[in-house]
Length: 275
Image 1 (cartoon, rainbow, N blue to C red):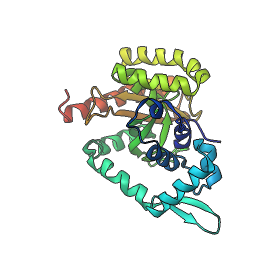
Image 2: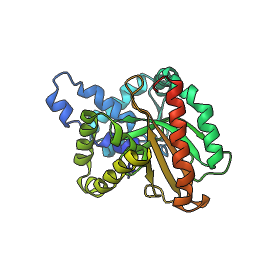
Image 3: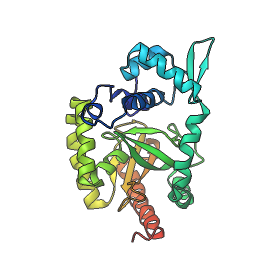
Image 4: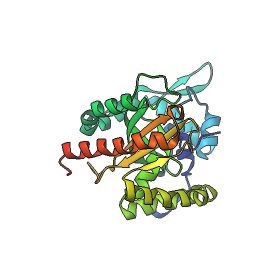
């Protein structure tokens, strides 16, 4: 079973017969299906078999067999002939490197993020949206032992995290509405439960400049997030801070983490010439 916000659940959310393929004649369904095979891997998956791909993507056995063979030939998958399962190949990593290398914001923000993570004994991350989830593109954590250790490439759900809510509260209306509609179609019940919290997050962002998560997504971590005032390179970046609940009550942690995260974002925006 996939976890909310995982790459596998994101892949499963768009089946081969989904709306883009039906409405857009230029949409290459075969290419999209191959990408969904790669996205089926979650952070805890060392290997997956064809049966796993069928379950996680909704594709037929024949289609999955053809796609895994092709992806292996291209180096995006590696086949274990003994276990008859697949690992991600090095080509996946090399494909993502140009994107990360081109994000100069990461290099600019990294030392500031590390300083804040050390002050709060937590973790500070920078994220962008990927379809209906948020993806970390940079992260820094304190030297203290953390239960949750965010890594570059980690995926988070939109509706139940501070970083996701911050993006939804500040994204351009047309982009936000499209994502909200996808989230509603994926899980109507979860969407209905999240709507009141999203309204609260919008008010919090307007009033205090950040969104908060009171250990709702992960019970061991308080979350805070601040969206950048405007997109950079067509991407709306969001700063996220996670602080272990053991650091104190939510009110005590918020008093420190929220304003400091907001101040960090202001510093980054000034360095980029956005203010």
